[in-house]
Length: 183
Image (cartoon, rainbow, N blue to C red; front, side, top):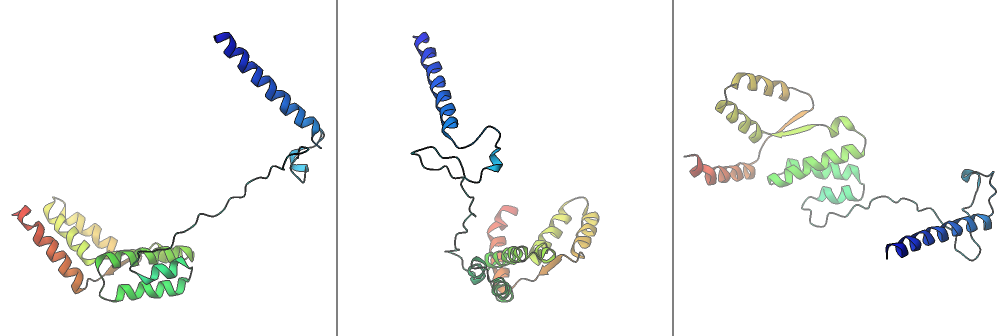
C-alpha cells in the first residue's frame, strides 16, 4: 500500500515538472531575458494571460447608526463641515457618549488633514479630574499625584471640557446607584 502511495506521489511530481518545463519551452522568453524585461506576462497557446492582482483600498462603511452629524461629513471627506459639526456637538448640551464621539471624531479629522498637533490634543472632562482627585485622597501619595496631575493639565495639548447639566445628572444617578456599595 505504501509503495503505491510513494509511486503515485513521485509520478505527480514528475508530471508537474514536465508541465512546467513544457510551458517554459512554449513561452516567448529566452533564457537570457529577465522577468523585468518582459513587457507582457507570458502566455501559453490557448490559455488566458496571467494577470497580477491590483490592491484596492479598504472600504469605509458609512456610519448608519451614528447620532452625530459630523460622522456623516467625515465619511464623505468634508473635513471642514465635520469639524464644525463636531464642535457644535461639544458646544451644545450633549450626552457623555456624544461628547466622547465628537472628541474622537475631531481627532480623526485632524489626523486626516495631517494636522497632527491638533489630532494629538487630549480632551479631559472635569468629572474625570474629580475622580482622579478622589482616588488621590484614597491613596498614600496624594501630594505627588496632585503635582503630576497639575503638570499634565498645564500641558498645551490638554483641553479641559466642562460638563453640562445632562452629564452632571448622569453621573449623579450613577453615583447614587453605586452608593449602597460604598456605605
